[in-house]
Length: 374
Image 1 (spheres, rainbow, N blue to C red):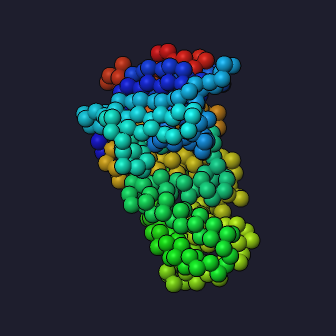
Image 2: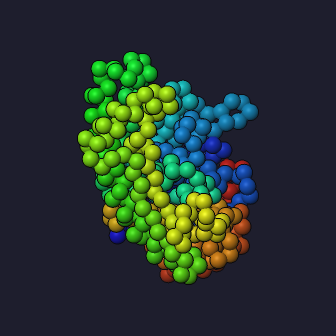
Image 3: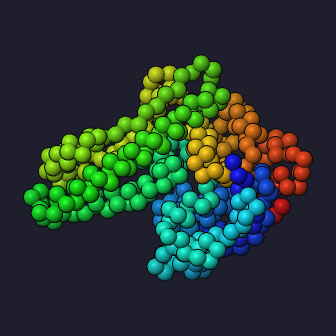
């Protein structure tokens, strides 16, 4: 796979990061500092630059810097990204007034947000990532959609089209009732795009589970079986799906949401033949999430042909000794760029990332009150 790395990063008015200009190392970038100093904000800024989204909030305006005087009018992150010797500049910004995003690649507006996000793949692991195995199905669907963006690029258009059709169907039900004349039209679009989303997620699921199994075996207790499957709530045949939508109209009107469709699907995870969400131990959940993140990294890397950038936010606070050792063994085998934050730099092995060129292979930073120093 081709190398991919951020060679320059400029952050302005994002959370408590008023102004950061930094040239990261080619491989490992270790950022340490006390809680509340801006470590997670820095990881979020990098993720925002690469994907145009935050992994912490759905409200982009929350990224804007706040202070006693009121806060910033706009925030932006600009990065120079090197992909196998070819450089590009990516910029993401947002204004307090209106809240609209500004996306640019080499000064040009991308076709859509998916085209922007596909340029510089990143994978993030943070304490909140544990909801991937412990929480509801939303996070697992989001994982499959992220992977599908690379495995089945057209899936983004189908997903947004499906979501719009679903909203319009629900509006027709609530405004005009279960016999609304336009319901069949919206349900036809729901079926067409919904089945395409299901196919893309199933393909992403097969790829992720295929890579997660050996990763879990390396990280977890030996001989602990890992399994999984994609669970679809909609019938696989178009006619049966149409019939299910028509029959569920009264119920969907009462519930204010559709009863069937990929918005209710799940990636079912199993440990030792049992449902992981309800039976796995804390250590097993952590091993599961690490394995899923390793799989996400591998699948996206193969599909995109580059090594995704890995963002690790304060993971040492969530991992026990065995899982921490497994994580560092995994990191040592990685050849891509890594940003790692911690409150306990003494836990990071001194030789991690120290290769033939220590000045480029690893750079250590300290962050205090939103200010980053090498």
